[in-house]
Length: 378
Image (cartoon, rainbow, N blue to C red; front, side, top):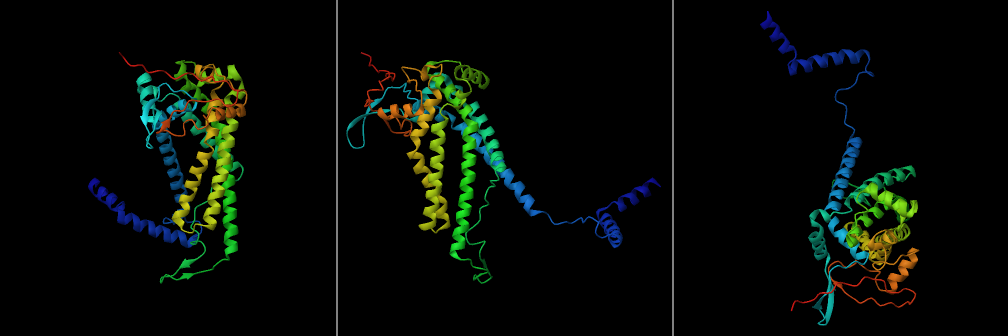
């Protein structure tokens, strides 16, 4: 009957019956051809799962990086305007910690507040789109270039876990290598990692530089209130019309020299400090952060020169006199900023003391726009 057929069908396809039926077929099949029978309970490939998890974590970190870059863009916007020498707010007199009277310029938060007061909240994110596009394109492109040169990312491993093991009582067992062999292996790992970092950093700068130039010029429109660089496509046409293909790589040389030199010196210093002076594993992770901070501070003037060279000669008020001289070479820009004491523009974002620029070299006349004056109502 139909009711009996339903009972038979439900019994046959119940979980217990299905498992018994599958096991019986498997026994009969494996007797005839055991090699071709696929096992239902194959062990999971843990290495592939771990690789997928690492790849997923990389994409999550990359997304968080883009989000953080977007959130902090107003401060980068204000920093770029400070680096090109634009000070729309007059300095105010204060008394320093040592007790003498001095003049201070608005800090980074006050500068962002001024931009928001002029252009609103949306105006604080001018130039963000080319920065994000440059970050995405340069990150993907640099990884491909590194793989093309055979530079695979080194897997992190502890110094001693690969060499020795511990038994249940805590005693170390296994082979112990000579210290010279360990040092030689660490040196080879450092060389491979430094090579990969140099390739990735160089390719990232080369790929992202056109978008960096577009972003800087978009932000510099705040000075003269222009709307020439309204979009990425319009900016590309304007740069090509004014400077040709080389215009997309304005300011590349000082940025490349400063960043690569900083990378090499910071990585080499951290390696030798960890090798000769630091033995604690947790302390070793902090040494590269400290050395990177120190050398980034030393080579900061290259960043200022790169930003100025990305803007000089553009069809914007911020890239022409009286706001900025037209430099023919980045060394000329360095000499001029050095003579006027402006190589560290933007390095201090909170306590910005104002100094009257003095020209030491007579070959570079003053072409800075005067600061606005503050008058009191009578």
